[in-house]
Amino acid sequence: MSPSDIFSIPGNTDDSTGLIEDGVTGVSGAVLFVLFILAVAEIMKNSGLMEKILLRIESYTAQGVRGAELAISGVSLLFSIPLGANAPAILLVGPTIGRPLGVRHKLAPARIANLMDCSVNTMFYILPWHNAVIVWFITLTTVSQQYDIVAPSLTASLMNPYSWALIVVLFISIVTGWNRTYAEPQEDSAQQATT
Image: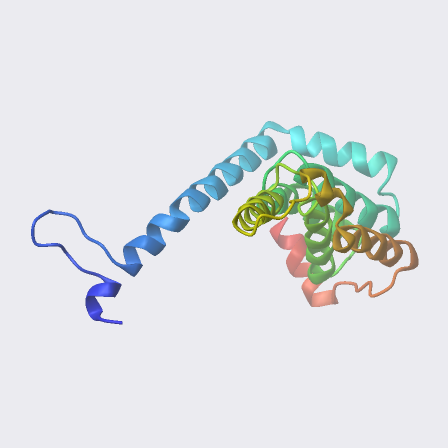
């Protein structure tokens, strides 16, 4: 690899090329999407909508620690369904619903993060409009055409054993309290101070 592969300015134009520019260009769309989701989350938070959702969740399901964990996981999973990626769902649910519920029930931040992360990574690998399934299907279709073999239909993504197993393990973990951790007293006071 030469230095010009990393960054170079062509002599005949006022343009630049190289790995650095390609890298920045490649992630700029994702960065803008995340910034948009954060802006939407802040608008929803400032409008009071997420607070109303949180109050409704607390009054109906999140009265105990098990209910709070089910609510954190369920809301994360539901928000991941319409979005085409899993990180925006976490960015939307985390600060507005996940963290406040976790703090009220003294859950460790790692437990809250694991609940949200596991939840959004279930439907993300099943539903046909999610990035992972789209990339999988396009790759499968390309390879099947290249080697002249029959490709499975897009509905085969619904039979992803990883996602279904993750849902089962997550549910068992919540119901039984398996691997549940609580915030340490100093961690708990720091969390409450920032909410």
